[in-house]
Image (cartoon, rainbow, N blue to C red; front, side, top):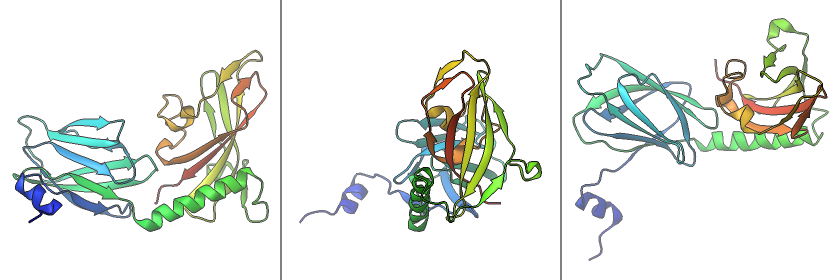
Amino acid sequence: MSLSLLNILGYFGLPACTRIPLDPTTKIPITLAANDLNRLSLKEGRISAVYGADIFHVELDAKHGQVFLHLKKDVELPGQVSLAITTEEGLTQDLEIFFTEDPAKPIVFEVPPERHSLRKDAQQFFYDVLAGKTENCIIQEGHHEENSGMNKTINLGWGTMTLTHRILSPHFPFVVDYYDLVGHKPYCQYKLRHNLFTSLDTHTKTALDHTSICGVWLSDRIVRGKRPVTVAILRQRRPV
């Protein structure tokens, strides 16, 4: 008689994983092992950061986007523990932690299908914006509206980025930001990399919400003096 995969896993004592759909609008309860190594991962995606994990030893698998958590030695468990994880696609999930003495079960988070569809539609909108196909349906906000937070200048050390206008996507909460990027000096030459806008750079992490960036387009790969390079960024705004 052939054994099913589930029976095989049970026979060898391997724990089944716990699958949890992400819902950034609420705090999700999860159970972690107090005396074991806990693994968190995202189906068809990557976890990019963990926040509030002071009582844990945290290891982030940068290649696969998995997180490994183990309670620090002799730590006294507080009455309530909260964590937050951020995915590479800009979703932030708050977690309420409970503990068990049982062996750890891998926890796999899943993005609901409707969110995958939303991001795909927003990316198509981004491509249409870059191709000039959205002139009749976009909303432009003037950069002079300082009170609305539209007037942003970011000092990169070797140059500056200034937000010139914003295009709101019909696929809320996505937005396209346009920046003019110029060097500080006439003889400045700097080769641009996309990860300048998608990684946590010490100069820009306060000014740009990097955890929400879904796409970047550059009009040129090299900044030459003070001739502006256009930078378009597809971004997902955090829910309020």
